[in-house]
Length: 222
Image (cartoon, rainbow, N blue to C red):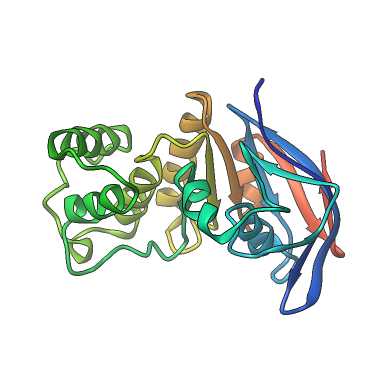
């Protein structure tokens, strides 16, 4: 399998305090990883370090696809983020525009120009998440589960190899949460690498995957 992320002996800091030390792990296409640990154990910091929202303090190696996070310049960060799909717990949809408008905004911001190609891609990703008939809806007209499906569609727009989902079921009822995890597993089977942070250990039992655990400032793999 193709390796798309490699961390070796990495230290992650927030506000000049060490959050995780000696982090060593790799991710490959088509894998599904759970990221578990108590609140404050470093899960979100680790995910944010991958898309350069939290800078790395040190490390022997920290590569995400073709990007070296240890030497990454600010101007390269938008190009890194185009290759990563990010799914937030609180959706972060623009409330003043429709589903189509939200997705079009992201495509424009990431360099798409051709209107026909944009509409075709929007239709494609909405179909992938079972929301093909919702493009005209405003976010407030959608349920929490529907909004999260739109967020996953948004994450898929630029065909990322890596999808990072930070507590994607945290604001959803259990049944809807299961539907979202089923969708994320399906995406990993289609070749995307998915990393999902969660507190819900029942999901880990019901939908098997590799487990990464943040504990006592360390990342425990396997």
